[in-house]
Length: 114
Length: 111
Image (cartoon, rainbow over all chains, first blue to last red):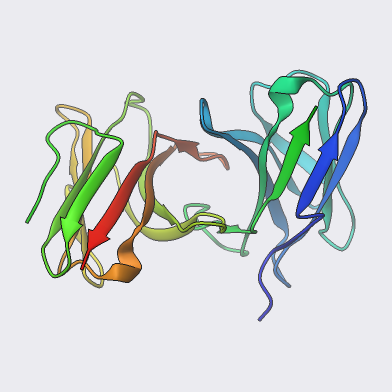
């Protein structure tokens, strides 16, 4: 069974630009969560989607947004990039009937903002 | 084995020894406490979880202990192997869908 895939794996942008990251969950998983990982702040929850609906949102500014498609694939968008947005962005999917404790993470997209 | 009384960012352990990784949590309302392992270049991987009404749970070579009185969580790894070298994170979850991660501990296994 294929794992969670994220594209692109690496991305370099400049301040003020916007970026879209993509996540394909494990087949059959309908919940997709996004996390930001930085050396200073650690792993922080961004948002979670299920059946195209955002159910949870973390404490991030409105520049961070996401969506989920009918096939459960998800995208997140960051507009007006700032240097502090440089991070590893991780996507995780959760199987149905799960407690949500075990989330399956992809390898992440490494975003560098110059 | 080697243990960490307080949370320290790094832990070096001899192969074959037992290791203990500690974590302090802050949210008394958390229903679950979970341990994840992140190897270099990969996303975090689930190890084991424990419900807040339990104080101990065992898995394969791992044991999680929960002390709610002092809000402390620990992960014990028996007979540490080179493949156990990774960053270990504790996480909490209330009755919702998000995980709140703590600071990680980098475990290095010495041959």
